[in-house]
Amino acid sequence: MEIQVFNDYVELSETAAEIVATEIRNNPEAVLGLATGSTPEGMYARLVEMNRKKEISFKDVITFNLDEYWGLLPEHEQSYHHFMYQHLFGHIDINPDNINIPVCTDVQVDRLCSEYDQKIAMCGGIDLQILGIGINGHIGFNEPSKNLTVFTHLVDLAEETIESNSRFFHNCEEVPRKAITMGMGSIMFSRKILLLASGRSKAEAVRNTVSGKISTEWPASLLQLHHEATLLIDRDAAGLI
Ligand code: PGA
Image (cartoon, rainbow, N blue to C red; front, side, top):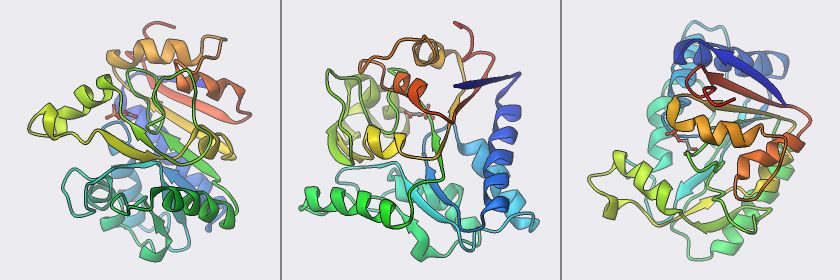
């Protein structure tokens, strides 16, 4: 696992955007796995700017988002659909038919999940998967547990996740308790993985991600088994390694 440490969040975001841009320049039909959360916002802002200046085009890019809250309609302002249009899709030349985000209102959840993985496979698999990391080491919404699930599935969110994400809602009670997430396999089968972490609150999770040991209690630690996983972290997130 390659680790790059940056002085600050701006440098980290610039580099992340450059890596995504290079992927798209090398393969205009790249399949990208995308993440939500505060961490990739700077990277998305830079990608929007590059697209505006016509330095890159998303015209033939295909995207799959990692996860979505269960029960939130796409138009809900805290849904990850909404986040993605607000920070990226609403500002770039992507074909809307090429955007994939789990829709979490279908009662046939098992079918929805297996179709999501099938569609990833039909598109040839993910070329570059972007990840954030939870303070508890989750990636996507694969929460620490004795067992991790391989494919896309419905998951109960961990208490730490609900508490941490409550900053985007009026209160903790409003945070959905469940989500659909790509599984660990859906993530690990990606050709390349880029994990972004910023801030002191992520330092413990980062330490456990690179510790040389793997544990389902720190899901991101499994990335140590991936051939092309890169960690982009700022100095604060690197504080314990
Ligand atoms: P954050 O979330 O970028 O908002 O810190 C990351 C995550 O929970 O995966």
